[in-house]
Amino acid sequence: MSQKYPNKKIIAVLPAYNAAKTLNRTLADIPKDWIDDIILVDDLSQDDTIKIARAAGLKTFCHQTNLGYGGNQKTCYQEALKMGADIIIMIHPDHQYDPRLVPDLLLPLLRHDADAVFGSRMMRPGAALKGGMPWWKYTANIILSKLANLILGLRLTEYHSGFRAYSKKSLNSVNYLSNSNDFVFDTEIIIQLKLKKLRIQEIPISTHYFPAASSIGLQRSIVYGLSILKNLCKYILYKLKLKDYPQYH
Image (cartoon, rainbow, N blue to C red):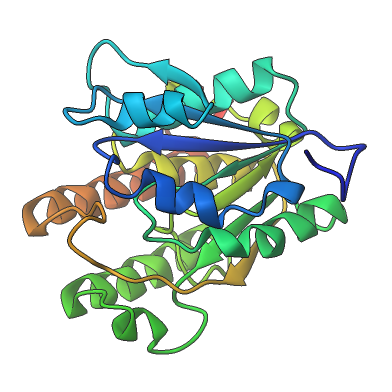
């Protein structure tokens, strides 16, 4: 389908869990002339996600056990790379991120200006709050991102968005399979990209919270925040050569 860039194979991956209510809406908003193929990985949903995905003609992969968000991403990237993807773009099927922004995410990769591109809800001041992000998540997002920038030497406005695109080179360069199966996967892969001196760009995105969109509560968010701090400590120890970590090789 990718008529715009026929020399690049672009595959969209959808890490799905109980996305039956929003999947068709997400698919309808993906600009198909920018995408060669779409695959969905189902993490043992308890609804009709798999049935709807297959009815839509998606290549569908099903976990036999619930692995978690990071574990779902691992399968997404493995399967897309097996299919020969040059660029892999992750689109959440809960429609929290706007799929119509796919071209904005892809262009820096197609122009070879970046190795990975992340959508950021924080580039436009206050936009995330207007989109319904709870104030405590907004505040924690800013604090954790500033701390990560200080330690990693990056200038990202957000580390926690799930709207991302990666080049084949970037995924083949990092040991993402050794990362967590949980939400902290997203931060771990940023650390890996940094250590491999791969280029990350951001583009501004909008988002909106609504009942059918997936979102973790306060308790899970606290665990997530602590996991980020743990990984930043690991990075410091690794850089100071005080401890080695295979996932950074």
